[in-house]
Length: 254
Image (cartoon, rainbow, N blue to C red):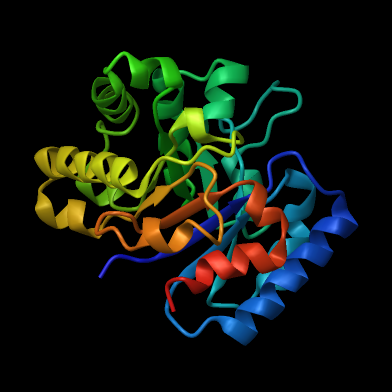
């Protein structure tokens, strides 16, 4: 059975004390409310990571992730963070290819392939993001775009490495807009992604990969989204900054 996952992306929000407070609230609600085997992941800014991994130690339901990592092992890359640095503070997951990184920082599929190789080498689990813009959806090329992102960025991996990924589908037109893809729209893309994985790696690998929905997911629409057969959880933005909302989304899988 595929792992059910709800990952929170705090983006560039919360100072250190605010982050610790929110994380402790999330942990307390999880201990109180979560009865299933679903996994929560908090992907915070770098300044929080050391403190949060210490707080998460021994918690089997709550893990910590970073929001990015550099493709190089080390070097003269001022302001960047390496995979080795992340593992040294106990981070388990790392988001790669988020639409904001692609849009604002020019990250390409070629670059993301290198980043994926590096973080896997260091034992991190990528939450790899793919998805189409509004223009790409309206022009009807979104299946082609999503396939291209998979092929160029992660389909070079061996099956054993690919199986360590979590895929997150982000309809870019629904991120931070309050507009959510319908459950049917999301399921259509998730099923397509799983079909492409099966064509490349076989059905067993495809059936084992968790595919998350990321795009204005909240406690109200999560039950309908998560009821779809190929949606295994969510990558949560705004709602992850409210402990009650975040755990209520996770609670859908109880």
